[in-house]
Image 1 (cartoon, one colour):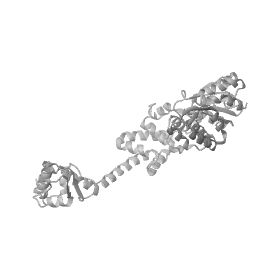
Image 2 (tube, rainbow, N blue to C red; image 1 turned 90 degrees about the horizontal axis):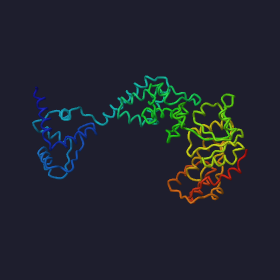
Image 3 (cartoon, rainbow, N blue to C red; image 1 turned 60 degrees about the horizontal axis):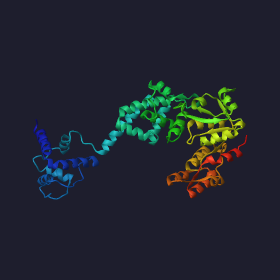
Image 4 (cartoon, rainbow, N blue to C red; image 1 turned 90 degrees about the vertical axis):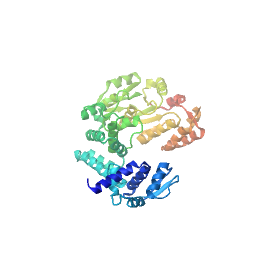
Length: 429
C-alpha cells in the first residue's frame, strides 16, 4: 500500500473513531449537497460534552458552549495543519460515507435524466398513437396524470412501467363510441387477460380514467356517477345491471321496430325499472307527448303515476343523485325531441342537481315547480347547516338564483312530496 493511500485510510479511521466529530462531518456533507462544493457554515446545536471536547481539540479553541459553528473551509485548513495535510478531503468524505458525494443539483439532474429515459422507453413503443400524444401532454404540461405518475415512479418504477404500458394499450383500443360500449371486465380481459386489471380502485384503472379524461377534455371524476359516465363516453360500461332508473309512459325502438317489453309496460301504465343493459339495447327512446316529467323522489313519482297513470304521462324518477342510467335515458329522450321537466326538493342538494341538469340540457330542460311561491307554501322546519347552504354558491341557472337566495335567508328546506297535487294540475298530456 502506498504512503498516500495509507494516510488517507488512517484519516478516515480517525474521523470514524472520533464520535465527537460525527455530527460535524455530517454537517459538512449536508453543506456539500446544498452548495455543490466544500463551503458554507455548519451550525451544531445542543453540543454534547463529547462533541465539545472533540471540536475544542480539533480546532484548538474553546467550544464549551451549548451551540457551536465553524466554516467548512476552516475545518479543511485545520486538517491540513495536522499529519493529514495534503490528503484529498473529498476522498476522505467519500470513504467515510461509502459513496460518491453528490450535490442536490447533481442528484436532481440525474433523477430527471433517468425519468426522461424511462418515459422515452415507453413512448418508443407507442409512436404515432393516441397514447404517445397523451404521454407528451402529461410531461409537457405537468397536468392530468402527472402527479400520480410521479408518485408511482418514486415508489416503484418497475410496477409503474408495467401499468403504464397496459394502460397505453388500453387507451389505444378504446372506441369512445357509446353504441359500441363493452363491459369493463371484458375490455380488461381483452387487453391483459385479467378482468380486474382496470378496476377503478387500482393504479392501472385510475391511469386509464386519466387517459379518458384527456381524450374527452374533462376533469377527473369526483364521484361514482361521474366516473360511470366518463367510462361510458369512452365506450366502457362499468356496471350495467345494478345501474338503473325508473320510468313510465316511455317507448323504445330497435331500428324501426317498437320494443315489445317497453310497449307492454306503457300500455299497462305501470312503472318500468330499466338498467343500462336495457338502454344499451335500444336505438331510440321516445316520449309520445314529447314532455317528460322527472322527479327526484320515488314517492312523488309513485303518487303522480297513481293519480294520472291512466293518461299515460311520460315520467321518470332519479332517486336523488343522478345515476348514469337516468342521464343516458334523458339523453336519448332529448335526442328524440322530448323536453325534460325536472322537479326536486327545495334544499341545496335539490337545487344543485336541477342546476346540473340545466347546464347539461339547456333549453331542452325546464326547471319545473321551483318557484318562490311553491317554496313558501311547503316550507318545513328542517334547518340547513352552513356547509349545505354554501353548496348553492355555485348555482349558474338564472331560474334558480332568486330561489337560492330565499332559501339562504330562511335557512329552511322544503320537500316536493307536498307538491304532488300541483304537479298533477300543471302537467300536460
